[in-house]
Image (cartoon, rainbow, N blue to C red):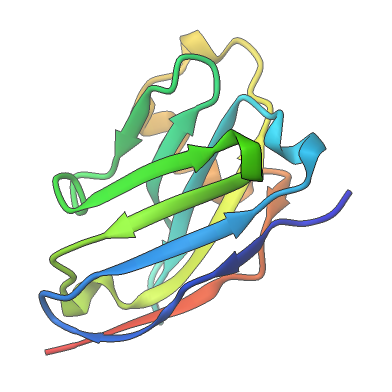
Length: 132
């Protein structure tokens, strides 16, 4: 299996925007849940956003709700994370992830977000730095 590859990270001032991209293999792209998680220095990994490939439902951590948007382009096998109104506390390495979650309807969105860091297909991450 080819692991996902993230791009689009960088340095930006508070209030700015970045768009992260993640290219997935065709097989990975067929997984029923894809998403983004992040890890800041000295902090636990945090699920940020998830999208269900069937139906397209999206879910966000409270910390990014209203500022971040997850989307995907099926033709390009690519997952995106549009990040607006960035804050210094958004500084972290961002990873994309994909997996097949059986009996998905039994899980709350919070549980799915929390599970993103343990998904089978994860990229190497891309650094996002937000300065005040």
